Amino acid sequence: MTVVIIRLIVVLLSAAASGSLAPALSVPWWVGALVGAAFGTGAVLLESHMAGVPVERLFWGALGGFFGLIAGIAVGAAIASLIPNTGMVGFGLPALLGAYVGAATALRRRADLEPVSAVLFPGARRADHAKVLDTSAIIDGRIADVCETGFIDGTLVVPQFVLRELQQIADSSDGLKRNRGKRGFDVLQRLQRSAKVKVEIIDVDFPHVPEVDRKLIELGKTLGARVVTNDYNLNKMAELSGVQVLNINDVASAIKPVVLPGEVMRVTVLREGKEAGQGVAYLQDGTMVVVDHGRKYLGQGIEVTVTSVLQTSAGRMIFTRPREEGAAQGA
Image 1 (cartoon, rainbow, N blue to C red):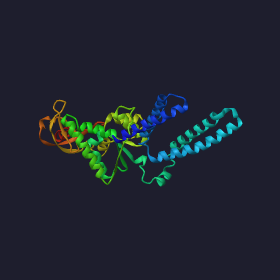
Image 2 (image 1 turned 180 degrees about the horizontal axis):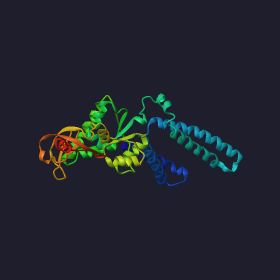
Image 3 (image 1 turned 90 degrees about the vertical axis):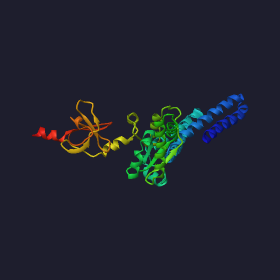
Image 4 (image 1 turned 30 degrees about the horizontal axis):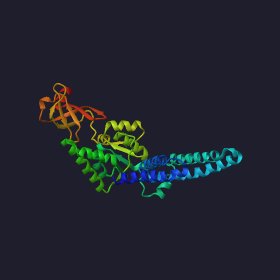
């Protein structure tokens, strides 16, 4: 709220200052005030956008723009001396274009400048190690367990619009949603207490983007960071937008024990399957085990032989049959 008030004061002061200068320019005061308010609003929008830009990127952009400006001024001076009638346009346009080219070139080649950035900004957030957390990954909670193992390092970035969405869930009238929101805040507190990672909450927003998922993608592009999620739709949307994703579900699937056809395991049949005669069991990690002809063993622990394994983006399913049936078929 304090930030909003300060930004409003900046716009009002810009309008007042411009309005007071209007008589000197022979224009009505209200025209000057409108122009000043427009400039103030532009400055506020630029400030809100720059809040999420890493400091080293700002540095290299400014430095590249400075040297480009010098080169542009030199070109503009040469044009003005050769063609005097060009006036300020012939001098100023090359300077403006030079500043733009210099800043853009420095930002596009910032990967080559990374060793220098590491020396100049040793405490800055490295883009390759920054991860933006989305609401689903925070509520899921497994990200805290993964961080404790040390497999994820760097800075975990949590934008304010994610915190607002988490607060809306925690304030929901639905009891289940309310518990999920509270769990999300507990997970964040656990991450902040962890010595393995650094959690950074940033006040950055993209007012022109209404959806939280799109805001996360825009923030990932701005920071050059990865988005951590377990939301399938956000995962695909981010990949199509050129933003790297760390999907918690993919990590969980990758570390599940490998089972091969022909292996024997012991499971407890918990419920009936979709097909006639099938039974369904679960491993400790939640993997579904479909037992062919397992309905008659409902509630019992039996040994089963793996027949096939199906891996999908939604998870893994293991298809089996009771061991004695497999032995009978083999005989």
